[in-house]
Length: 326
Length: 259
Image (cartoon, rainbow over all chains, first blue to last red; front, side):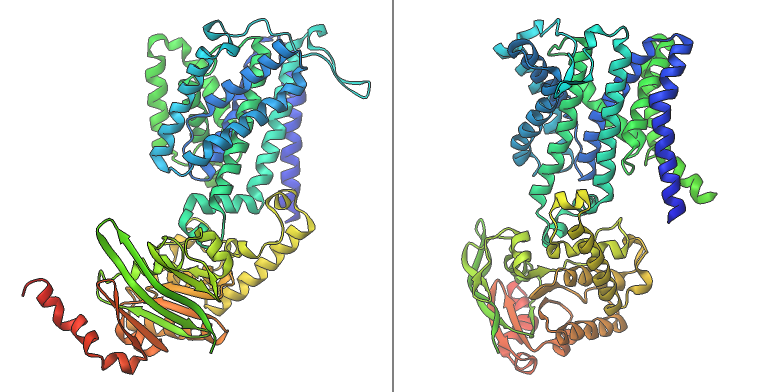
C-alpha cells in the first residue's frame, strides 16, 4: 500500500517536473519555439478530450464536444470584446455557460443510448457552427478577430499573472497556462473516477436498468457527468480563442469533435490519462505523416483501424499487460 | 399479519393488448408469495408494474399503505421495493464485492460532492458499505469469489450475486425474477434454502417463477395468472387442487391453439 502510494507520488512529481521544467528548458535550449504552440494545443485538446472521456465513462459516445468548445470560445470572445471583461473572468464563465447549456440539451438527449446518442451529438457540432454563422452577436462568417491577449490578473492588488501583451514570450505563458489547466483538469478527473462517483458512473455504463433498480438517480448522474464534460470543452475553447486571438464558426468543426473522440479511443477508455496520451500521439502522429503528402489521410486512417483491432483498450492497456507479465 | 404490499385492480394495456387485467392481491409481512402462470400470462409485466419499471394503465400498488406505482424506479427502490433481474443483469466488469458495494447506494449519507472531496461522512459510508458487503457475501456463500470479476462467475453464483445486489439496498420487499430458471436440481435446492434464510432475516419476498416443484416447496401462498387475469390464489395445496389452475396448465391451452 505505502509502496504503491510512493510510486504514485513519484510519478506525479516526475510528470510535473517534465511539463513545467524539462520541456521549457529543452525548447529554449534547442530554439524550437514553435513547439510551445503545438504543445499548448495538445494540452488544450486533451482537456476537451477528457470531457469526452467522461461521457464515455457513463456509457455514451460523445461526438459533440466541438459544439461546446466553439460555444466556450465565442462566450469568452464576446465578453472580452463587447463587454470589456477580463479574460480570466470569462474563462470560468465560458465553462459554466457550456455546462448550463449542456444540462438543457442533455436532459432530453441523454435518454438516448448507443448510436442514437452519438448521432445527435454529431449534429450538435453542426448546429453550433450554423448558429455562429446566423446569430447577429457572433458576427457571422467573419467571426470575431483581434481579441486582445489576456490582461493581468490581480487579486487584492497582488499581480498573480502579468499582462500577456507585455510579456516577451507570450507563447511560454500560454503553454504554462494550458498545462496548468490540464493538470488541474486531470487531477479532478482522477479524483472523480477513483471516488464512489467513478463506481456509480461505471454502474451506468454497464447496466442502467440495474443501477436505477438499486436506487441510483441515473438521469441526474448522467446530466452531471455531461455538464462536467461540457465545462471542460468550454474552457478549452475559450483559451483557444485567446491564443489565436480570433474565433470563427469553423474554428471547431465535426472533424474536431471526431478527433476528441479518437483521442479517447487511442489512449484507452478505461484509463483516466488515456485522453492525454491519445491527444499527444494523435497530434504528433498526424504531423509526422505530413511528409507522406497525399497519402497522409490514408496511412493515418489505416493505422487507426489497425490500432483499434490490435489494441481495443487503447495504448495504455500496453502498460497494464507488461506489468502483469513482469 | 400486517400487509406489506397491496396490488389493487391493476391493469396494463399495450395498445390493443391487455397484458395484465384487473389483478388484485396483497403480500403480507415476512411472507414468501409466488406469482406463477403459463408463458405469456403477464407475470413479467406484473413484476415490472410492481417495481415501477412500468406505469399501470389503471389501478395502483401500495407499499405499507403508501402509493408507489407510477414513481420512477429509483424512487420506488428508495421506498423499499427492490427487484432482482434474471441472471445476466449484474455489473459485469466490476468485481463481485464492488457490485455489492455499489448497491449500497441508497444507504449513503454523503452527497456526490462529499464523495468527491472525501469528507468524513463519505469515508464512514465507504467503510460501512465494505463491511456490510462482506456480510452479505458471506450470507450468500460468495465470500471466496469476492474479488472475481463478475462476468466470470458460473450460472448459480450469478443468480446469488443478483440477490446480493438486491439485499444491499436494504429493501422492505424483495422481488425475485425467476430465481430458479435454468438451474439443476441441486442448485435449485441451494437457492430455495437461501431464499428461506432471507425470510428468516425478516425480509418479505415476492417471486415470479416457472419451476413448479421449487415454488410449491418455498411459497407460503401463490397467485396464479393466465391471459393477464388472476385465476386463483391460495396455499400450495389449495392451488394444486384447483381445477382452473390444472386447466390453465394442461387443458385449455390445446383448445386455445385449436387442437
